[in-house]
Length: 463
Image (cartoon, rainbow, N blue to C red):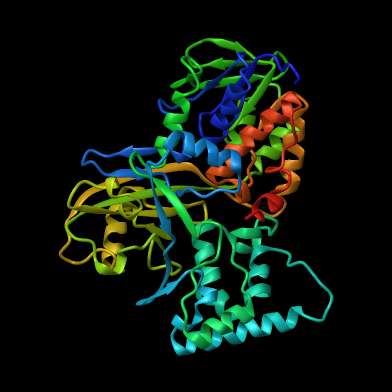
């Protein structure tokens, strides 16, 4: 095992804690974690509002591609979790269509169903028998893969809402398991039998902490790392790459031999005082969306429509949110007795501005209009949070930009990993992020190679 010297980890989210977890396993002593917030967890944190409702920063659930991650979850949660079969829906007008929509066309209105099926058959016919060409952008990929019917009904309007950028400006290298590519024979069999098919995807079965929301995982993990290992409320104000030091808001200067950072890559590069100007310029071209979380705590009995429902997708522009999670279905302890909860996610970008001051009222009104909140149901709590960095956008040319930034940093003993540290949406779930931290420590110490960051497809194709 290589002796790395002092390892400093910036960020106590899933990635930073994954790196720290591996260092603790190996009984190394010369390392610590710095976190600007006064709690660990990053984008996987959870909060309890004044009325006793628990809220996550987005619809996080537990599923995995890794044995190491599974063992960590077992260690920190044990049996304190609830298991679920995913029940997700797409709302089109007054119809709830099982997700993925492309496998459940029998639930559509007759005209929509015919257009969707005809477009899909045309797309398959157009792509068979001729030379194989890769669509030049995400919009072209949608039309090439699904045809005009499904594209117009769901894929284009939904993805426009969730990404907040024109789809022709997005690339395609990220797609892999993130989008259900239709299998025509499976689809036609479902049509013949009028059978609901909700079994696609790695999160078709998932678990969730019984208490404390998703954030309990990372709070408990941080607590196992040892006293003084995780410095909460510690903001980094500057990084000197040549001297290998970081400056802190409290005036301290800390030295490092290896720096592992999960800070947003654009922000981190701005902190580096002596970074190559070309690398700094490349970092300025990174694109992301912000995310608003609106939690609506409700008194009384949940409507039958939502019993057992995990989450609901809303592709149409009349609804401000792209997804609504029935968070009280994840765990009965996410809401006080006699209450239930809905959590809406709303995208914000320069192409999709949001009126923040009125967003809560707008979301509640839309939830009533969309039938998720019955007319006589009282709102017991309204909780809002905005995350500046919500989704790392897979823009055209992203991989070339990352290819200029990440190797340049690694040449200086800086390893940027995680959802926004590595800027790869396709490996940005909790398990991916944790393992990016775990794997980079193995690489630094000479104990193994990284897989998750360089080869997302290999990771995501695992059962």
